[in-house]
Structures are given as C-alpha cells and as structure tokens.
Amino acid sequence: MGKTRFEKIEAAHLIELGNGKKALSVGMHIVHEVTSPQAFRMLDDMGLPVKAPTHTFAVTDHIIETGGSSAKNETIDKIMIVELEENCRRHGIVHYGVHNKKQGICHVVGPEAGLTRPNTTIFCGDSHTSTHGAFGAIAAGIGSSTVRDILATGALLNYASPKQVKIEVSGKLEPYVSAKDLILFLFSKLGNSWATGAAVFFTGPTMQALSMEERMTISNMTIEMGGRYGYFDVDETTLAWFSQKRDFWDPRNMNDELAGTWKSYNCDAHAVFDKTACFKAADVRPMVSFGLTLNDITSIRGKAGEVGPVHSSRKQYEVTPGTNLEDVSIDNAFLGSCTNGRYSDFVSAAKIIRKHGGHIKVKKALAVPGSMSVKHRLESEGLDKVFIGAGFEWRSPGCSSCLAMNPDKLIGRVASSTNRNFPGRQGPLSRTFLMSPASVALAALEGKISDTQKFLQKNSDDAPKPQTFG
Image 1 (tube, rainbow, N blue to C red):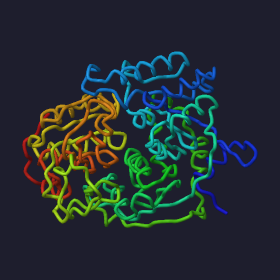
Image 2: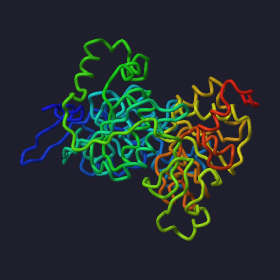
Image 3: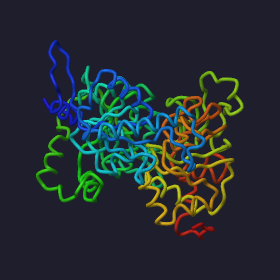
C-alpha cells in the first residue's frame, strides 16, 4: 500500500517507547519569548539541560513593539523578552532577538535562514508552525509543557499519528488572484473543522504552480481548518529555494543525491487518504471574511452573512447581513504576519499603491515586514517609500497587530492580511476582515473593502499611469 510523504517522515523519526506509547524525534525546535519562559523554568526546576541546543532556534517576535521603541511594552513583556535572551545565552541557543539585525517572526525567519528543510520534523510553541510544511516537513504548533519536553528530551512525547487528508486544486488561478484568496476560498467551501487533527496534503496543478512563499501562506492557515499539519511534496520549486546562500545553508550542499533523497519521500501515487476534496482554480475570486469565524468567508463581490453573538462593545463595527461587502467601510489596515509578511506579499501590495496613486483613507495603516531581511530588501528597492508616501506606518518586524499581544492594538474594522478573525484578535475593540495583502492595500486607499481583481483589470499596464510614490 502506498504511503504519504507525512507517513514516510513519521516512520523515519518514530521512537517506540513500549506499552503502545510513541515519540517523534525533533529535527528543529523553534522557541520564542511567550511560550518558552515557563518551559525553561520547569527545566531548571528539574535540574535538566537543553538536550539538543544546536537543534534549537529562538526568536523574539510575539510581544515586541514594532514602532522602534520598547517603552510601550508592558513590564511583563519586557521581562519575558529579557528572560528569553538569558535562557538562550545560558544554554547556547542561537537567538535572533531584539538586538539581532536578522530578527523577525519565527515562521518567516526559519525558512529564509535555511533552517527549514524537507524530510524533517519541526515544532514550535506557536499554532502556525504548520507553515514549514510547505517545504515537505512535518511541522506543528505545541503548548508550553510540550516545549519543556522537547527542550529536555529532543523528542515530541505522547505522539499519535494523525489522519491523512488531501486537498487537490486543478487549473490555473485567474489573474490578480492570490494564494491567500485560494486558502480563504477553501475555507468558504470546507469550513473550519474539515481537517480537525489531520495532516493535510496540498496538491494538484494549481498548488504545484505556487511559489514557495505562496505555499507557506497555504500551509500556514492549515490550522484554521482544524488541521494540525499541512504540507506539500518536494519539487523543483522547493529545490530552487536552496540554490541561495542562507545563514544556515550553503547551496554547495545541494547535489543530485540530496535532491533525490528529499524527493523520495514524496507521496506515492497510490497513497491512501482518509478523505479528499477537489476544487477548480477558476472558481477562486478575491475573498474576504465577513464574520467572526473562518466559516464566514465569501467573495469580495458577495454579501455579508449572519454572524454569531456579538459583544455590545463591538456592535457598532458589525455589518448588516445582506450588505454588499464592497460597500463596507474600513477603519484600519494591517499588512504583515507569518501568513503574509514576506517579500512577495509587500510587492503585491506596493503594486496596488503605485497603480492607485492615492493616500490612505483609514485612520491607521500598519506595514510590518515579517523579518529584518524582508524589511531591508524592500528598503533597498525603495518600496518602503511607496508605503510611507501613501500614509502607511513603516514598522520593524514582529507579530504586531496579528494577535495584539503587544502595543500594536487597533480599534474598529480592520482590513488584515493575517490568519484569524475571532472577536478582539487585533485588540479588544477590533473587528477583523481577512483578505490578501493586495486587498488590504486597496482597502486602506479606498477606505472600504474593494475588489483588487476589478481594480487591476481596470488599471492594467496598458492604461494611463496614475501618480506614483517612490
């Protein structure tokens, strides 16, 4: 019987503990300032060292203040940031922290630094660790007690094999439709519990045509459909990622033998899945969430539907069911996160700003690159000036308003390139509308939810050029 890529990696890392219990050896363990302090304290209480410090990597990202000063951080936040620095120093762990010129969000920095590799296992105390599955790895988020276990043993204890499910998309995406639109479209069809606890294999011509950064967006949001893992097979696009020199990767390491090994773990033609869902790329349009769960998603050209109970403090930001979403006003815009804080995400947003030529009509618009590397690359190309010229606040890297465990809290309706839309996600009085980076940029400029596909078709390269910044 054929095996999935997941099952092959699992078999190579499985540790039989006896009495029916299993563990999974961990290839890379990412820690950050929020879920690691408790784990390190527990380790100290037990008098244990970090088992595999060279397989552990730390970042400061969740609660860091992205405005350039730590003065706004709460006292507890400052303590957690310093505590991670000290723990990494004591245990000899590489740390991309606040004083490191390569600091950034864990799921942006890991891949760009060359730490994320195919055929391995990656865990982190953050639910969106599934991002790394884009490279053909087993990757998932864990809690603080599991962070402790991995620090102490180098293994994921109490491991249970997940169900294997597959999502296949055929055909070619229409012009100006993004990977973020694609994953939101899948939620609109499958809901937020279709893949509960499962390992989701993304395949088909549409998925295979995506860039690595686009694949990371897809894998990142696997958790939002209930999945624990999301992954792609290794192909030439994957291998091309490793043709570049990275902090922890030398492209001279790549040879036919290694490429063959990585590809040998790909899903067998007759791999067995518990269930499969098939879709056509031609059906995907620019998408947006209108409600408070990932079940509440439709085309930007659609209408708002019914939503669940709303707290009285947020009722003023709700949308009447049946309202055309293109008529819904927006108060703030946020561009960034581990879902859409990469170079290509900002390039797509900058394209909208340049073609539009206007200034934001929202109260606040934050542009927060996912890493210092992304930030510096954009600045070297002058794209920071495009955002600043249009009225965006050009920030330093961090999770920022994606989850607002920091000073970057927003009030009112937010056009957001992030991954979750539950009440208060981006601040106690926030109301999140999830969309692509391009859609966020257009919403900020128009002051309302707007269809990027219509806009770009109307303002094609053959049309007269509007005013530009930068």
